[in-house]
Length: 542
Image (cartoon, rainbow, N blue to C red; front, side, top):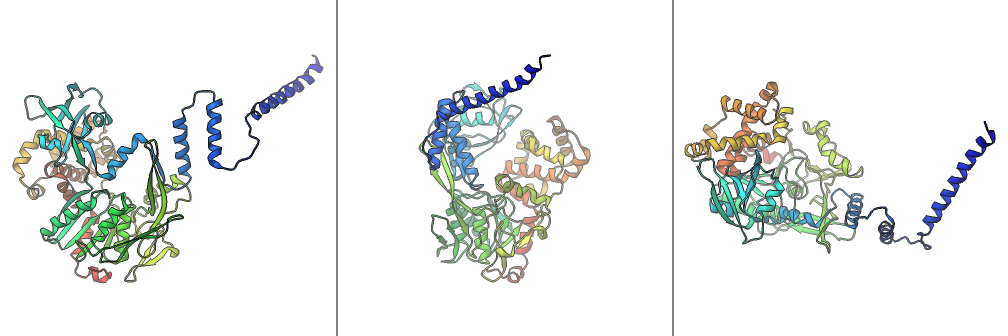
């Protein structure tokens, strides 16, 4: 063996590596600038230029820039966000409170578009479209059994105000197909889900968000209930994620006396701005209860915080989400939108209820789901409060900031009937599908038998035969039979089934009336309102 070769071969490899490194350095050096510039924007432009000039494949500038924007915002806080132009219209609809289309809530069952309900006052309802109708053709083109997705339905049925769309309907009670020509219109998105008298003198209003028309809807609901004898009110803000700041302050104003502080905001470049109540208010006197939970955020917390700090309402439920940051939208030249956090908001007592996001966005959002594992959703004692975040209400009660609003009366999460079987029913939408199928067979009989909600509530309950039919239906729709868990969930299934049928017959009011009969937070609110001394003991102004 040539030992000299063995010694020189590693040296040869080393020389090749050094030359390669040198050539690589020389190659890179041709693109280096001679002057150091600390301007971050110029640095970004420089990187983008190198990518465009030298990257191995043709880069897509738009994706690169949008990705960089999203990454940059993720380093700020969990609520600063970027909305691409293609998504902005849909995002706006949720707050501006309307879109243009034919006005239906639909579901896709067995590859067919099923009308769950026509929206009140919308063009579909006016033309005679009914819950349970199947849309089988749009503009003469077959849409049943061809794999239509939800986004396809939206694309084909939405359109500019005044334009027409032709649809063909299969109605189970009819022998032939029905053709409709519907003129698209502006369709309101309602943020007041329900308003009804929950007990003699006690009104109930469910608000699902704070949009452009929430205040007008709320005023109409209050006036309706006052005409029916309301002198006490349950304001349900459970699972209300928030919305417009001015919608929140307008509604809080309905309950507070003139000149009382509702909320104030301030930020690094934004001076303190205060929002106070005016002399007008439709419910400044009367017992008031506000319902909240871990899904109540932002504008919901503004309303709740103001009413709690002024001792105007008893707050019942579980600790709210904890969002105390204010975003301002900035429209970009390409139609996209930047939602940038510009300030924090503070309740009248001076507390900011924003949760910490020091551990990053993922940990921030996971905190809400981890409340269950920490025991917080089952026991108020598991809520960690800091003395550094202690404040006092107008009448001297202790309240806390720095992590949502803690209710005055805690109600644990009701997990009765929840199990893997029930979760599969939810995720596969089996309950809704079954009710649609049931209503196809029974709508005419139910409508004839139950002329009003009270008779339906009193006399209709899913019996054992109906529940057995549902269990068989669920099995045939991909939910594996589990007799033990089905029996555990039996009462919950029956209640939700009845509520969904009530929505078909009596709109959203009927739906919530059924659900609330079994809602522990709602029942606690009724109990408190009917306790003559509860408000006085808690120093609540009414």
